[in-house]
Amino acid sequence: MALLCPSLPSPNSRLFRCRSSNISSKYHGASKELMIARSGVSTRSISSEKGLSRRDLVLIGLSSPLSMFLPLSSPVTHAEEDVKMSGEELKMGTMVDDINAYSYAYPLDYPSEKLVFKWVESRKPERYSSAAPLSPDARLRIVSERVDLTDNLVISISIGPPNSRLTSKEKKTWSAKEVADSVLSDKSALRVTSSQRLEESSVLDAHASDIDGEPYWYYEYLVRKSPTKIAEASKLYRHYISSTAERDGYLYTINASTLGKQWDKMGPVLERAVGSFRLLPPTDSYVPPYKDPWRFW
Image (tube, rainbow, N blue to C red; front, side, top):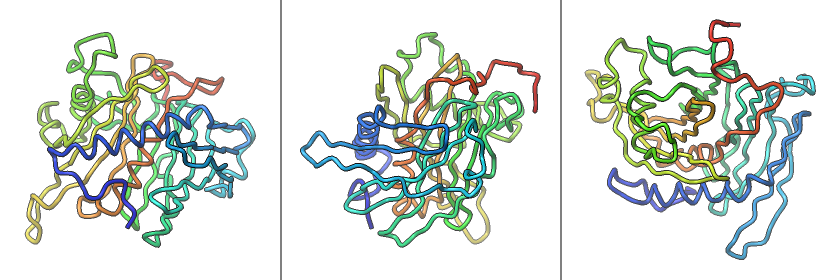
């Protein structure tokens, strides 16, 4: 089994911080070499500062048949690439959403575990004003989501304004824990207070990285589920890893999760996806969250 660190860290361990910062720095070094074409072709070269030879990654196909029929001006781009992970070739797809101006990579093939992921776009990218809310106050909304029902994986992008937990107007003064609390307190479909929503989650680790002069906040957390007669409450949870960045007064967050019992196997793969998340320079297709808040189509 290919892992980025020898074992899953405990809530008080610093392994996750080490592992996530390595991921972040790896993608930071590669971010300027990610060439995104409107035709749907994406390539990336990853170089190592430790003397490893540099190797061009080869585009091997489109991750979705639908992408083959999208016009050249399509606001969504999908591509595939091979990424080296602990001696294994991990095939990754690239998702580019021009409507909300972000990108991330997601796993397609995990050879060491003999897995081929079966992703379905449960929510195609859409503007913030028409996106599905995550809570009754509709502050935090999911603008895109993909799921793998076979392996119980979910990767989603949510957008929402900061809440009162972030008291400063200067984002570079925000701590990762404060950002995590802000996002998680708005993330619930239940009609409860923000404090009760926050109690549903347990943050294991939170730290920040500076990428191209912009702060990205990373945090790992558990979300408890309701117990049943055959399962103890302490064993029912989803394990999440997230990254948040700020633009135009809104928080953009990628969330990747799986069942807690699968984290040893799936965690390193989801960390790779979250570590690749970047806000992109806006194009003509970009729709800022504050534009036409009344519009739902």
